Image 1: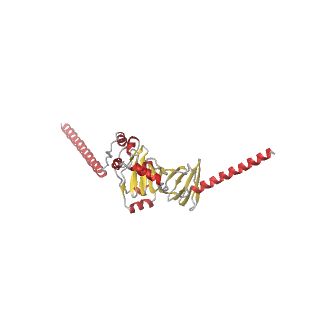
Image 2: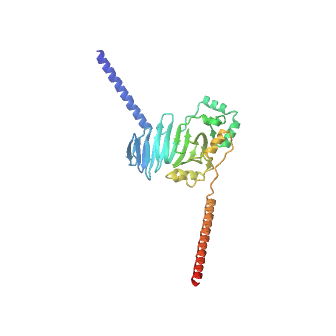
Image 3: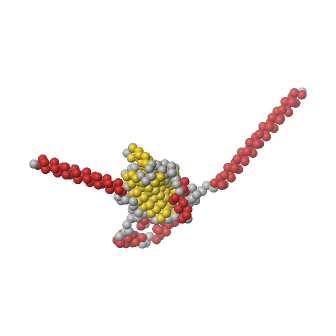
Length: 331
């Protein structure tokens, strides 16, 4: 009797476990998925790949999935029951690092993506009061933060304990050359080689270099900034809404080609400045392309002159040799 009861109990528990597992799988599938709008995309999971090429096709997404888009391709990723969406364009390589309930973490290794992240719920009255109290008496620090163009951690932690600093970011994006953190906003990221370009469409995006992760700058709506290997984030520059709309709609990482970015500091200069708590930025020298070209032309002219003089000297030597030979022959 006890044996039969034990078997029935085990069977019931097994059914319950399988039911919960199935329910968890269905919930996960409902939370994260992709939709192909045009072109082709390769989904890579656990060493296996699947090619999607039918417009309107959808597929469930899991953590650590990798996506590679082909030419003339657009797909949309729906994360956290469509709270967060990612529009991925042609020739992009994308990775879903973490799809936890609290936050999403993704990587754009190359290509272009448009992101839309749902803001977190409004803070409670207690949290708002705490934040307000924390802000009081920090005017000097805020002024310094504004001068520095970013929020500081590490060596300048005392200068960087602002309300924004303490807010937990719910969506993180990393590229080869940049780290981005947001709580709720719309923005565009293009990554190519060792350079990352950012356009904030609304809200605020925090931008940092992985070489100096403790220094991040806020990029606000209609502002652009970029990070390249060996440099910190450039000073944000405002662009027109029309320019921003053109960048958002264009296909591929080349969408920022016409943008004039602000100045940036080298990683070495930035690290040294933070170490000595110095607020004076030391921007990298901008390369004067026109001046550089003129200098190259001047050197080319000098080289042509040297060659011409050498040729004249050779001709003169030949003439002297011929005259000397004729003189000896006549004798």
